[in-house]
Length: 438
Image 1 (tube, one colour):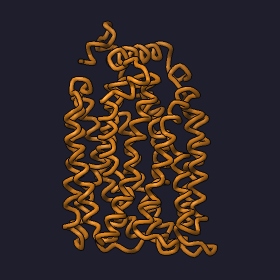
Image 2 (image 1 turned 180 degrees about the vertical axis):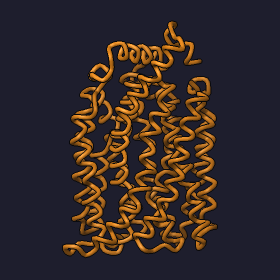
Image 3 (image 1 turned 30 degrees about the vertical axis):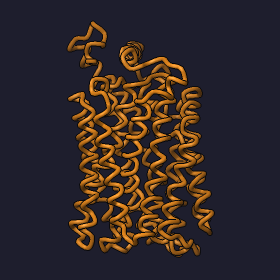
Image 4 (image 1 turned 45 degrees about the vertical axis):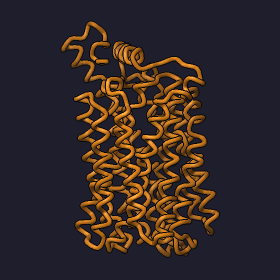
């Protein structure tokens, strides 16, 4: 269904210009702060990949134990995802996102005191429980402010926090581990967890002042602006919202298709997030600071591709190809990466394409689910898809760690992820094009 035919009938070039101005104001008021919040989340989520370079020896973590511990995060995350989103829909984004960020910042800092693999497992589970609902909560929050045709560009600002956390976080993590190692008798990886928990705590406190719940709550939009946004969202929801019972909701094949597809995407995303420093180390970069600096390069590629495809998808109102392309690119590059081991420039180039493709897939995917659901069902649906899909956050590091442990070969683990990504590419073709290309 063409979105343009569902807009208010008094649309004119003048109102087009005004509409663009209003949504631009909303974007720059909300999305930079949400970007910083997601940056803090990913900083806490992926610093474990750098900490592994020192932590594994001190705590006695094999690749299998590390992979299991890294993945346990997503068990707690998945269990509390849907309840968290439903609570946010009821109490508001400001209170609930602040709660999420403050609790995960505290738990992230506690990793500095881990002494055994069991401590590592417990803290990873609790971190998942604390962070549950953040990303899908923001995805739901965006549906309160932007109609579907404008969400991809808005969410691209949010999702570039993933690669930016690598661009900035990788060298910072490497520097902390190198510069603070031995300070006050602590290893560098312990300082890493303490210092990189600070942004989450600060962002959580700032949320109380910087994140309004709905357009009606702000004074930087006129009443006409608020009315226009409400009309746009109402027109959008007429085409996207379906009212259904819980049984119908759970029986909806599209929900399970999107969940399975997102599972495939997340398998690739966390193969990069948790193992990229290890892959760079395998290419010959063993110093933590140098590893961090080299690791920034693939994330820069990802920033560019996320922004380019987000703009292209919204302008063309096409979603499926804009998801299939980065998934296929990431899968192909990941499959080729073992062939470049030992050749640092070639390894960095291939890993750059793999990282760009796999991380862009996540950003492109989340423009699709809101096309099916609205209101409380959007809260439940987005939460359910993210919860089920993020089981792959457990499976990805665990499977790779187990395969590496058994075969003594990192490439074998990467080929497995490649196969899963290609299955995901095929699943995209089952999504009804007419319903999502708006």
